[in-house]
Length: 465
Ligand SMILES: [Zn+2]
Image 1 (tube, helix red, strand yellow):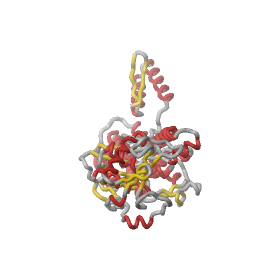
Image 2 (tube, helix red, strand yellow):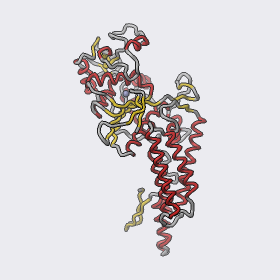
Image 3 (cartoon, helix red, strand yellow):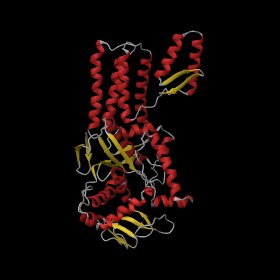
Image 4 (cartoon, helix red, strand yellow):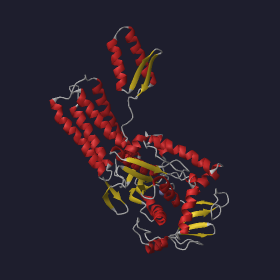
């Protein structure tokens, strides 16, 4: 598989550290509000990368943090007269609700900063002991001049960076690019005891510490939005590599920006949408489908019109799947015919094309095109004269490819409990009337929809497969 590595500005062959295993870290949300549509993009993209790697047989360990101590969280707490912890707890829950709607799988670990304070202190202490960090009045800074590789991700040298740096009034820093690792406690802020007095971590240090703690000193993939590449990821590299003397991450993957109606998203322009806002008008699967319809490195333009288009396109896929399922439900048990054998080879070609697209730097846009081609192929080649074996093969492939992207996965005919109960009653009646054919047909109909029946002395029980 080829992945575009921001570190080298080229598409590189992906080779994991350890065969068959992938260690992946994605920068997570600061939990002071609902996630917005710009946050949603990387979470959807990197969830898809993970799913694809898993589809290809890799054992992926996926870590995504929650920034649960931060100025914005403290401010929100003051506004709402609740503790920063309560703010964070609330928005972590809300994150999961949105993520579930967007079809984003849970990470293996979702570490929180406040659960890693001792690890952060130890990490900063080690940087200080090694001469990469210095303390001024209870604040600890990273000395960027001491780390030779500073600027390697953003491809900027120290002098250019300094020339562009904002002059900070009364700065205690030795050099303009130095950044804070530990901040001394101010009135009304949460704080933890440390060798430098009471305080709290700076932002960048948390990802270095949590990546190191849960994945080790060197990982395979570190990912996030393009806006994080500098300074956040540059600083993560500096901290991690200064401490370990080893490469922090072999691949750096960044997704492009999102515009709203062709303008940069900003609160002041009033074009700021949370995922929750959007979920009032659209099923969030449409948002996922929309995000995957573009290449992840390109900017995307988000608008009502685009979402409506995505909705129509996604519906076409659902319709294709439903039609196929309906055809299958009417077919008798039958093996693949001679004529269908060449079609079956053609069918396999779609899988190969899909994989090719995904292998090329997760080109989900092309992968989705392949799924549309597949649905046209099915439309043309599966009907009431098809063999059941071939029709099922088509459905299996359709489900296999859509499940990698985690789209078209809702059972549109998701049966309500009531419908199931009614059919079970119909089957009980059929058995009483000794109409065993009807009873068996009902059992099969339910089974096709993933409902398993179990006849017990207390009556018929059912469960979803
Ligand atoms: Zn991060």
